[in-house]
Image 1 (cartoon, rainbow, N blue to C red):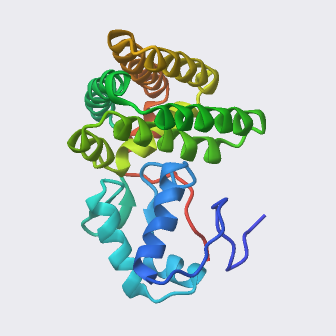
Image 2: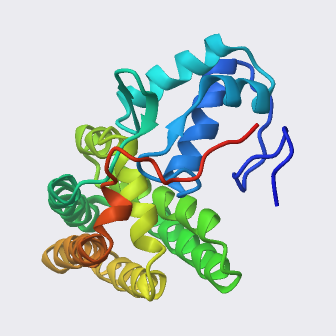
Length: 245
């Protein structure tokens, strides 16, 4: 059935922002991270402007914001499109994250205050509730908060900042990994174990568990990419869904 002029493929509702370009970029960012817009999808200025009820100027500005984050690229004579997901990029980024998160967990076992540990436990319990409701988007947001707090609990502000600034591209990989069968349950199990060893001040075990959790995610995602190469690294022909007039 054809969509009406005002319909989108996205699950989230667009709300007019204070800064139009920033609001559009956040809207498209979530659509890319959560897979509403697939790798290789073309982003048509005219269609987006009409559907979101804004002019083309903030659309172009939003594209530039997303390009800095690695989610969008501009292709000569084709315009803006969602970047492909490359196996090597996934491997590189997850390897970096595994070591940084491992270090953060080790330092958290040494430095975390009791309030930090309680907050990590509360976030994990909230994640359990989201998992029961099969609300992956909310679960993912809580997972992001969990790792951000882990970085802060390390007591190393520079490490926490580095983890935060790895880029929006990592969110796309992490969301996709969590969407794969069994991954949510394994993540919850790893979080509980991690909190336990942090509370017990076992630095080595905390580092091992945290690093292993990321490495598990990497291997599962790489296997999935190998099985579906056409989805993650599409050719010049765009078969991904996009906005329609």
